[in-house]
Image (cartoon, rainbow over all chains, first blue to last red; front, side, top):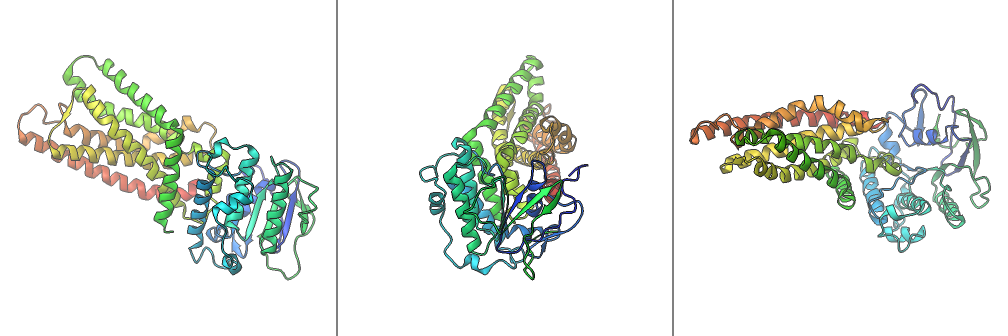
Amino acid sequence: MGSDMVLTGVDLDVTAGRVVVLRGSNGAGKTTLLKVLATRLRPTFGTGAVFGNDLVTRSDAVRARVGFLGVYGGNYLMLNARENLALASGLAAAGARDPGASAGRDPGAAADRPPSIDEIIDLVGLTGAGDKLVRSYSSGMKKRLGLARMALLDPDLWLLDEPYAALDDDAKALVDRLVVAARSRGRTVLMASHESDRPELAPDAVLHLDGGRVRSGSAAAPGSAPAGAR
Amino acid sequence: MSDLGVVLRVARKDLLQELRSRATTVATLFFSATTLVLMAFALGRDQSVLAQSAPGVLWVAIVLAGVIAAAQSLQADLEEGAFDQLLTYAVPRATIYLGKLLANWTYLSALALLLAPVALILYGASVTGVGSYVALLAALLLGSLGFAVIATFYAALTSNLQAREALLPVLMFPVVVPILLAAVRATESVVTGSGAGAALAGTAAQAADLRMAGDWVLLLAGFDLIYLVVCTALYHFVVDE
């Protein structure tokens, strides 16, 4: 990143279908790692792959299977919740139609009827606020809308950057429920979080990022398919 | 959904946001109206000078307002990390660029079509004949397109810079000069009182002006095409960090 190395020597292998929590102090490189995996940042050195797709040479294929929720929610303030979700759904569907980009996508993802936008809005507790401009939302409501987008798109790899930030207890429990449900559908979840007491989440691994390196913890199972960055 | 569908979705999103916030509309209309009025005062009472200046002043107003629009065009995307989110979808970067370009072009064209009659009336200039109107329309639409092509590209290029609003015109103006020259010349050729044949009477002079306007419009279209191809091809280098 410019003249500073944010991540150095990160060696991470996340097993598909696991929930992994990434901890670390401010500036440790958690967001950078998530953005690299979401292909928003290109690694200066080293290689990485998501579901076997190289982060640089097959970035479209990576994007077709990855969903990213940034710390600010990533919503358009002058659109309402329905319009934000419809835009996300349309663009994600356009990416998924490319057979090269979506190769290897879990066929189970399309087995069930996908939830409607109305159902998703109800699910995240924004009932009645779906037609209001996001500009009028509180920070927590914006984060709920971001979670709604993740639940609607249901990517194979969920990348969540501080998903509990700005949320009340009910909404934090909602994050837990969404992540646990995603894991039950075989999705992989990698989240950066400072929340230490989330027993409902029951993560499969907790990793500590310090000074740009993964200092402790393991998220890999022997013989499992890699879905991470190295 | 086809690539065209992605382009239309992105464009609709941008236009919908502008229609609701009206931030760019208010700023650009006020700025361009002020430019037209101030220049009219500065040029004095000589009717022939005013009429001859109309095409140039019109494009100055469009371009200065266009810079404001370009700077604002990515602002809504940069808030709340929405542009980062947009770039996480597996759609070609070119479709995102073309969508934003379509929105910017629509806005700039509407602005140009609104300012043109105001400038003609204010500066006492006129357009005669259907052919001249068609040439003027083509000059306004193609000039706006060329400007929007470059503005959309450079707005993304400078989006991560701290002084982006100051750097945007500095970086953009040298590149946009060929577009502006062709647009001003095409407009000048069909505005009565400013074209080469204005001093001569008769349809032969008008026909000569119309041919000249046609040549400039073709050159403008050529510039637009070159810039469009280059900017579309390079956009992913600009937005991928």
